[in-house]
Image (cartoon, rainbow, N blue to C red; front, side, top):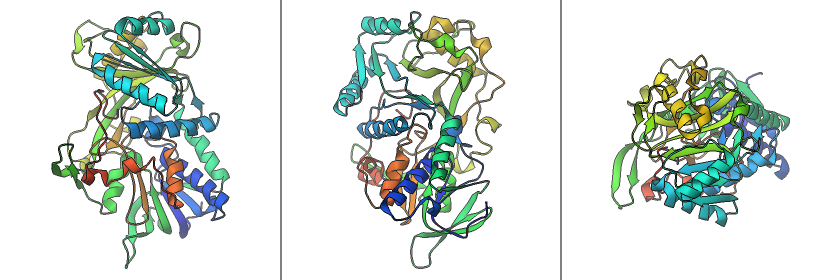
Length: 448
């Protein structure tokens, strides 16, 4: 593709946010008579789905303790449901299975899901929870479980096929996608704060508007725009905490047990919901019986023919050090530093065995030759920042909630065209200074 000298809309990142924004913006421009997809250029330094969107577990859920996140996710689920074939979407449902520590908060999620019309079932008490799970899986044996939230919507999607499906929809609207084109900097107008061009490895491209949906690379682009590296945050106690680093890096740990995906069907032979278990029961090694974890822990898993087994993960870990010095590239399985090792493999396989007897003694089936892992770039409170900076730069910083949030691109397109979205209001950058923070759950995962 010839490098254009000028475009109206330059979108950085050919992952879930960049492609979703491009497609929905193209539709909006066409339907309003204000333009078309030909006004939009998506650039990516590698290729479509080369980042987090291409390697994530692909879970799609509403399960959040934060009301704003639930509303945003309900919207995103509706977008997944709008074209399940193109998006390679499997609406099998989702289950949050929890200990007593989390029962009250999960019950709140259920009540508020009822309020927004998101179908789910809530089972309380150890005995009833065990009975409900045995009704799905006769070999269920997880300990210290006192509640089950069964979301009847949601499920998972196949990552790379869904991204190419989304890219196809965008290109059908006339959107151009240029891969192998890395953003090296931005040009700013002499008499304004607005960006007038993106400087790329293939030349300078003038533009009227910029959208950044670059996932783990947002810290680098943020610095190129000279945006603040630290923020002041007003806490719940009214005190202002100055000098809080804007970005922090976490390493995501996921993998695949190389068994026949059909071995993880429900009692009636159906594909199961995505399973997420949090528990404070001691975790014993399925290899030698020693205690691996003696605190709250969690995992998620699903049978997935795309991965060729039972695929999932556990809690991520914080990457120490200055975010600017953390090597995001090479990314994912190609990284020499941020891929899972033997400790994760034993722990995750033992977690599976803790939950269901069918997974006992299966650690030798783990796909060790298929490296997995990836970095996530998180905000100070681990929730997305979605806002306009420098007058004409729309930033979608998902704080690793990304892949499931396909609907954010639709809302971004709406705002770019001049119509504010109430669903995005709780995710403005100003919430830090104003103290409008999201409530924090008891989950062991930073994104819940």
